[in-house]
Image 1 (spheres, protein in one colour):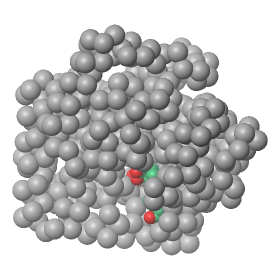
Image 2: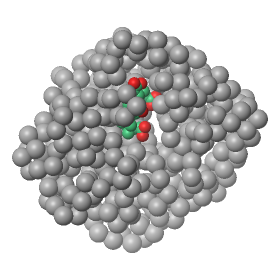
Image 3: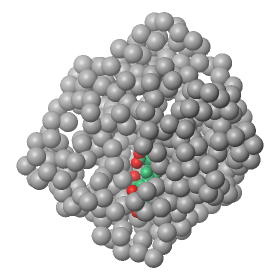
Image 4: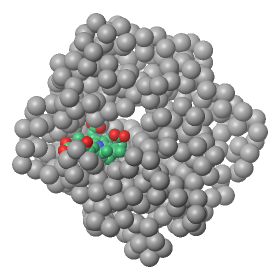
Length: 393
Ligand code: CP3
């Protein structure tokens, strides 16, 4: 297998200083025994940790109320709002983790890129990035442009219990690039993939430009006190394994390497990634997020098999001791619309599948989550019941 370490990504100089690592360590408030952190280390947590992607947002009346007169991106730059919205689901559902309320385009917006989030559609760019000039002109975010996020995180940490963790996040290269190149949400990511195939140099230049922004967005959150981070490559599942490996994986790997010295767990997640799981694990996250299509035990087994094969083939990214990770997932979000009985049964099934993965040695622990985000039409009481059901086991 190819040595992926030879890729030309220039994020190496963004590795944190000892001082920055110290700042991050003293900013973190969660106990090392918090269930999510214990599960990642492979210890038995005091209870199985659970959070839901998109737990903050439109399913909650208190969110709709507070966002009534404030634009989505404006709310991400208002420390009081981002703290309050992040905390709303944690209070209501007794979640084991808060996911920072923000968006994958926040660091681009902070850096001065013309982007807005259109309700019901998603991020829309003023002008798509499709030429060498546009890539050249794309700014890299400076940490000083993210002070509102830092302040908001301070407000969140003031309220979280010490057994609850704050998860920071960033969009990973393919997903971010897709919004930039397409100019908005896309059904098939055709323009993005066409650029990859026909102008690979331009694609790599864009990835090189984006990677430092992703790293800085993560670093700012970690230095402000995030206990873990999730790298969302939500749309990576549109790629074949071959293309993911060549065009995306080297950048995700460099991004994860650049935050590794902080020693906070990194979760990596995408949708429709059944074919990519081994490669997504090979880029080095501690936790692999699984969508709802692949049972957790099957997914974890695939990851082990793929990492073992890569290690045996001399893939330098995969060391022997990094073979087994925690898994996160993977209840179908639609199950939350199906009534209490179904929710109960399906929550128990997901836990059983996770337990099988752990028993087989394919994962050290399990973080319960959905297989993607909460659907906006979900009844918040159904979400609370799912949390209670899971915690009550
Ligand atoms: O609880 C959470 O998950 C909190 C924060 C969060 C949001 N976006 C809030 C949000 C996170 C982690 C994201 C990341 C994000 N943004 C991703 C990766 C995660 C994923 O869902 O796969 C992606 C692909 C985006 C881009 C994006 N932003 C989309 C596709 C949309 C939905 C558009 C719509 O209106 O349906 C957004 C907007 C957005 N981000 C909303 C929220 C709560 C809805 C906007 C609103 O409430 O008006």
